[in-house]
Image (cartoon, rainbow, N blue to C red; front, side):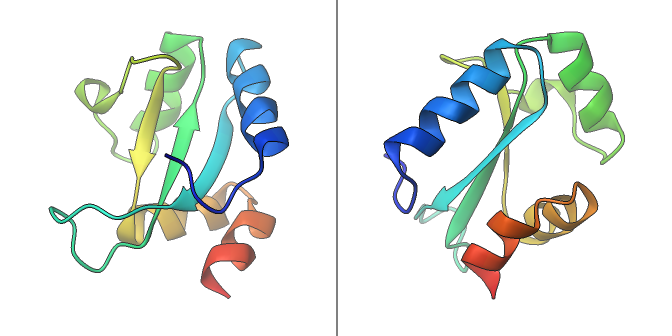
Length: 98
């Protein structure tokens, strides 16, 4: 469940992923395996080769791609913050980290 995002934001992310763009969606998240992480960013793209190449720029491994529904990397912790800033996703960064 994505908490802290609107249905419109979720639908826009899906549209961008399907269109083959690298798309970002940050939402609140809780997983006991990752204490201290309160958010996750889904970096998705239906063009798998494009997603793999993009991820390689950040040291993300292809086997980390979640293929369920919409192909994406789950970013959290320092990776998440650094990538949001590097990709110019300031609105999402400020919304969840400011």
